[in-house]
Image 1 (cartoon, helix red, strand yellow):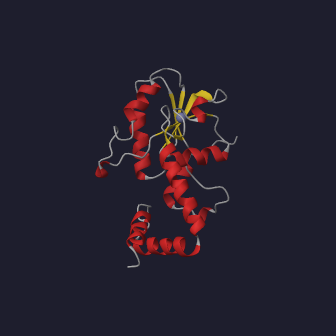
Image 2 (tube, rainbow, N blue to C red):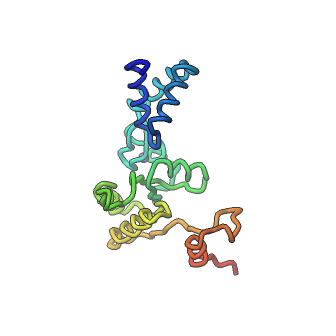
Image 3 (cartoon, protein in one colour):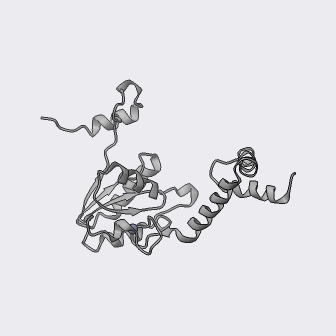
Length: 198
Ligand code: ZN
């Protein structure tokens, strides 16, 4: 090929999810031919991110400090804890502006076939956090996938001995969604979890 360094760049780009050899090669060509400034900027941003961003010691979300801004904030309701799978879910819920409590990020979901059990996603540590009697309500906001549901169920079972209110975010028809295009499982969940109007 052109050069050893070019090959190394292609290999490096393949660490990204869903990037195969052809996409990696296309990205590498773009960076070295069309956007060298962008390439340097990208390299610096990657270096900084990898050096300074790590997990929050309390909630396992991402931060540059020991404890993230949300955990450190006195403005947030520390009695309500929202459990999510990934920091991306924290960002999504924060963006919605609908939640003013604290978070716990599992960093994944139960997936026995991939060797991911309760210890791998820190469930014992979470149960320990919940045993300290500060949190009164846990909102389980794991994904509405088979694994997300199994994780929610496991967490519920693990907290049976604690006097906590445990809720699950509602699943159903999306805003602006037309019923005929909603899949039957989602629709049956929506009917099951219907809300009272009168
Ligand atoms: Zn935190």
